[in-house]
Length: 389
Image 1 (cartoon, rainbow, N blue to C red):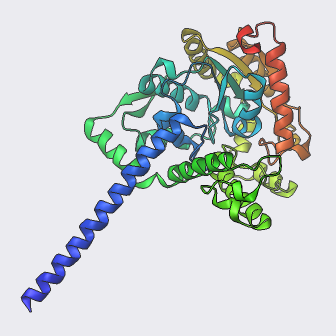
Image 2: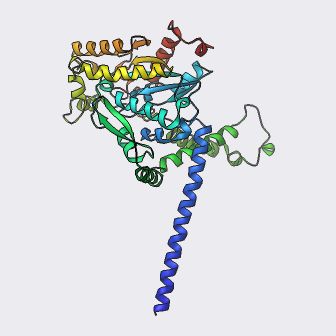
Image 3: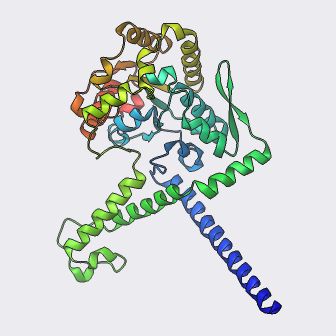
């Protein structure tokens, strides 16, 4: 009896060991594949948690040369189409770096993190910064990006100081535990991005030619080609939807816009940050704002980054809730602190029907915003001639 029980226990332990080894092996393969794909492909993993992209070396290391980086809050992510920037500036490569709930403090920390972890050559040559009163006011007070660095970065935690948040090195134990936490619990979306990138490469490789092709000459390595046309289209559309879901940085594109009642409820809801944004007094917070914007201006100047500043569009439902005096004070603070940077005010560019919600544009709205920003950059007297080539 004892022998049988011991044998069962041994078999159970063996099964557990095999399962653990298999899990570790699969993770090791996918981690290596992810790192390779992220260095070679134009990918945006973590569509619904974009803060984690800043923990991926392949998206930043040695990639600053000829890079335009779009930065700011999530409205930058939805309203500025990186594909259109790539078309407009073919000698450059555009990276969509907008952060959900991002603010000026998050941007400062992200640039400091890129510099310290990935090196000076990870910083872009050109930065297009989208700003808004919420972004400059650092609202809401609690935001995910800093929590992500605290919990998952192997290198740094974030410490609050009177001059704003700063990076502080983690201890060796903190670094290892953060790395293990990231690898064990935050890789699923990353792996889905890798699979989507491979699927995209497959679709490009098997794209149907425009001319008639003899079915007998189709490559054997293209399984979709042997399917009937209708099934092939269904399979291709399914793959394309999967690719768009896990590779595109845009979270809301293609979704039906929020109803007006929902927008108004969100704007006036007591637990929402929007009432505080609309009540925010820039003059009363001028010293803090000047300190943050000065820090950003000096960082950009010291690193030789060309900066363009965009006042982002806002839905009329939100615009009409600002005190006009406060809004003009906000614009003065931004212009004063970025006096040498080209600035364009697009607050009222879009019609209400061109918004998904309060600040995020629909696809047609994003196309208009992107076109206006590209035109502004190209037409500005300080426009870098290299970008125009």
